[in-house]
Amino acid sequence: MTEHNRQELDPPVDTAPRDESAAPPEMPLQKRADDPGVQAALDGLIGEVAGRECDAFDARLVRDLMTAALKLIPDGRDTGELKLMTAAVKELRYAFRVFGQYARPHKVTIFGSARTPEAHPDYAAAVEFGRLMAEAGWMAITGAGDGIMKAGHVGPGRGASFGVAIRLPFETTANDVIAGDEKLIHFRYFFTRKLMFLSQAEAVALFPGGFGTLDEAYETLTLVQTGKASMIPIVMVEGERKPGEASYWGMFDRFVRDGLLAKGMISPEDLHLYTIAATPREGAEHVLRFYRNYHSSRYVRDTLVIRLQRPLRPRDVERLNDEFGVLVKKGRIEPCGPFDAEDDHLDLPRLAFVHTRHKFGLVRALIDRINECETE
Image (cartoon, rainbow, N blue to C red; front, side, top):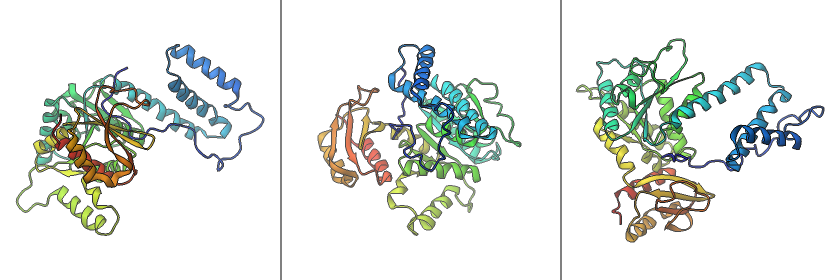
């Protein structure tokens, strides 16, 4: 099995809804999808198609998916709802297959305006940023359109680029860098497209843009802030401004501080979640520094497990406890080996602590401090 660089921070243990009391009762005249005979037939189909080596837990997840699908017609779902769910699952399956062929390289998602002209400084900045990331061995993911999206492909080149396109009346073709490439994926729905943008990237770079870019910026920040997405570096970059011209991300930052933080809409530690880079090189260096020693994170029940490239010195672990003790629900931040529940990257050293599940902005600051520490 190919090990991915990024781990889902909080994967669900049970995919079944916790409470279905609000839904109408299932009709008694039909055989229920969770009937033991139906479940046995599904297990037989899974075994026949997947083979005997199928992991038992994975097989259960597929059976749950098939069971949910079988319930749709008895539930009375109309054709439009069935089409939406079917198309979404098909889109995701295909997209995961494409990305699965490139599991090893780190990837950065680049967001920005489709309207940015090629002569604009922001376009040049996105080209340079993409080129620097590719030189460091990274691949780039963009929305496959023109403007910043095209610039994000020009920098790394076609071979190191993914296109995650959306079908819109006014954006029907991909840019000429990624058009026709096997790594170009077309989506019907924004929500499936956004899932791939964030689930497949180990970093997000934001360039100036309109409603769509700001939507992507705030959704990325929200998912990381609430622990619903893995901790990743979020860097904001723009081109050189003319004398007297306002900085795009400077205006964004002032709104966040004066319009959100000052009014108590966010917490002070949330400012750690993003960084404004003065230049594309500074932005690229910020992303690479995030992985200087940090590798990935996951939860084992309430314990946050942080995988490292190299172990830390004992005195640095003590400093982490002194500085970030507020994140610890009980016990301490301790070095450890892999937990029994883990089945990947077992060779990496770890830090672990029982997390309060609050103040994810401070978790981001903790990772920065880990990367600043000297290693054994």
